[in-house]
Length: 161
Ligand code: 6OG
Image 1 (cartoon, protein in one colour):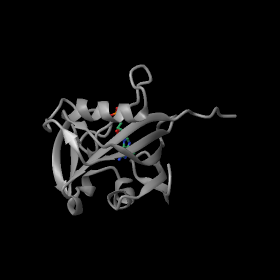
Image 2: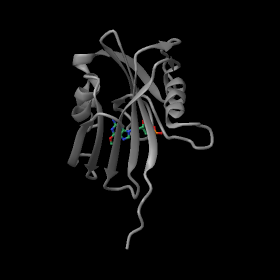
Image 3: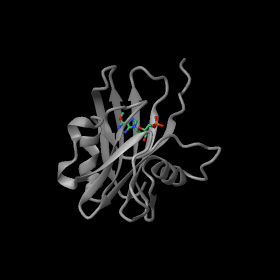
Image 4: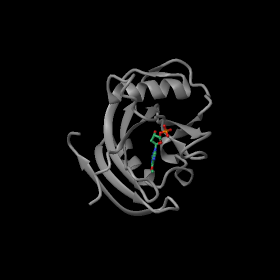
């Protein structure tokens, strides 16, 4: 029998301010070339909580501190070629301190809420951004094939996470 594979915990923080969404083009590593929110792996050695990890990654990747981050979604990604799924906690923020700046990992840019570059983003994003931008909370699971196309998905709007 196969052992249950523990999911890898990651974060994704999306700043929405004055009708614009702050995204970054990933410059290297997993998902390079795609636009996404800011985030990365939760490091149990340095992060006191998943929210702390989300704030740390935002600061490292684009130089700003979110002041009002709230958790809005939990997404589980199953990749055909990875033994462990990824569990990504999605955070929303609208207020921040500091100046948005490019980093080694991300090239940031603002997009109008109704014109985010979905064709250059992970294919799950078109499923949950509408709920996210409406202010709803959501739980989803996505299965990807080797070409990173979605073969199956579930998405539910929930009252509490
Ligand atoms: P690092 O490898 O950079 O952490 N991520 C995804 N984001 C979306 N929207 N869709 C996916 O569909 C994703 N798979 C991974 C979560 C990985 C970062 O990439 C995000 C993390 O922010 C498959 O440390």
